[in-house]
Length: 201
Image 1 (cartoon, rainbow, N blue to C red):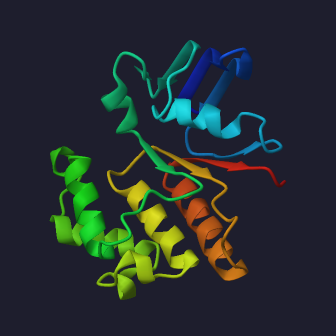
Image 2: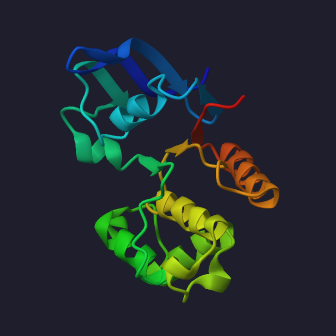
Image 3: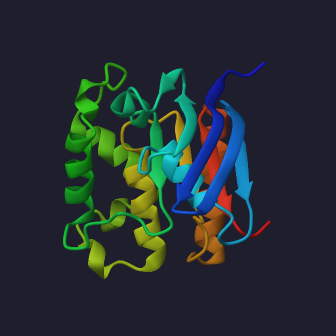
């Protein structure tokens, strides 16, 4: 039986009198790919923003790999890579400059499992998502497809156990979408868990 990477208990989020998420109990097992489906406005992104610590819950608990995100948010967040629908990119930075910034921000060098130098580590990620050839380019000048790949690269910095992708193929062409989904299958074989948020089956 797979270990549970995420558990939620009675998770709810209110905005005034409006209930966006209501009493959600959910378990996510490691090494699988999940689709989190529902129409626009159903509370999908709100739920995932709570899971990733970007948003606080009104009620309930979220446990990520045994760590309560309310009591130990930094420890829980370190286990998660998140790609929002609009990737959090600094458009005036070069790709490699942006990834170096995130490497320092996420304190990757403190992870005892990562043996490579910063440059070797980031080159490995860029090779994986096929952005090495644009590493010196300013992000503002990249196509939507390449920006999405840079967004995926930032989510992978830190070797997360759980990858959460919000509408990841919505702005991608067929080739880029296939590349992304093939990568998720590769990550699954390596034991990583992925959750894809989508309003389309």
